[in-house]
Length: 98
Image (cartoon, rainbow, N blue to C red):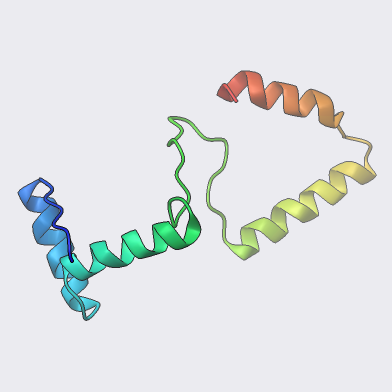
C-alpha cells in the first residue's frame, strides 16, 4: 500500500525545483522520495542543518590568498608578533556572539 503526502510550496519554488530536477533527469516527486529514503537511512536529515550567521568572520579565499596569509603569519611569528590562543578565541566569541 502507498501513502500520499500533500505539501504546499510557493509557485516560484515549485517551478525552479521542477526545472532543476528535470535537468538532473528526474522529477520533483522522485526527488522528494529520494530525500525521505535518505533521511531514514541517515536516521536524520541527509545534510547539515545550521543557522545562517548574520555576521561571519570567515570570507572565502583562493589558494593563493591562503598561502599569502600563511606566509604573513610565519613572518609575524618570527618577529614575535603573536597572541595567546585563548585570548583570540575569547575575542572572536565576544565579537561574533559565538
